Image (cartoon, rainbow over all chains, first blue to last red; front, side, top):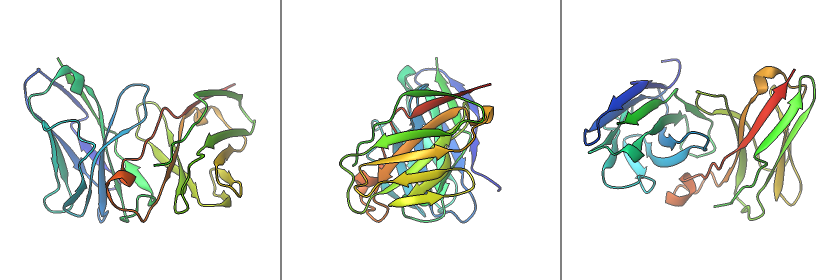
Length: 115
Length: 115
C-alpha cells in the first residue's frame, strides 16, 4: 500500500478481554516497530522486527503483550486480559532499512480504550 | 542512550523563522540526530537527520556544532500548518542490539504558530 495501515482505528474492549491490533507496513520495508503513545507524551518503544525476526521485545510492559510478524510483512500486537492501564494509542512504523536511522513511516495508529 | 532535552513549548508567528534546540550532552561518536514532527491525531513524520555540521532539505535545516552536544532544528518562515510537536532523537544506527532501538522520544517541543 501507499502507507502504513493499522486496523482497527478504534477499539473499545472490556477489561479482561484479549485484543489483536494489526499493522500492514509499506511493501518491502524490512523493519517494523510498535510504539505506544499516551496523550501528551512521546511514543514509547514496545518492540521491533527485522523481517520476521523479533529483534527486541524488551519494551513490552509485561507478558500479556506479545507481537508477531510471521511472514515478514503484516504484524499483530496482541494484548491478553486487557486492563484499563492498557488504554492508549498504539502506533506501528516501518522502515526500508535495518538501521534505526532509516526514515520510519508511521501509521495512523489504533486507539485502544479498555472499559 | 543519549538523553535529549528540548523546550516543552514554543510560540511563534506566521512568517517567522523558528529555531528549536535540543541538548544531548552525552551523545556518542556513532550517534545520529533525527527530528520528527507530529501533528495532532497523526503519527510522527520524519523531518531531517544529520551527523555533524549543517543539513538542509526542502522542509528544514539542522545545525550541529562541532562538539555535537546540541542541535538546532530551523524552520524557515513558519505557517499555521507547522503547529505540531517536534521530537529530537539521538542514536547509533549501526548498533542493532536491544537498547539502541528503545529510542527515548521524550515530550518533544510543542510549537504553536499564531496568525
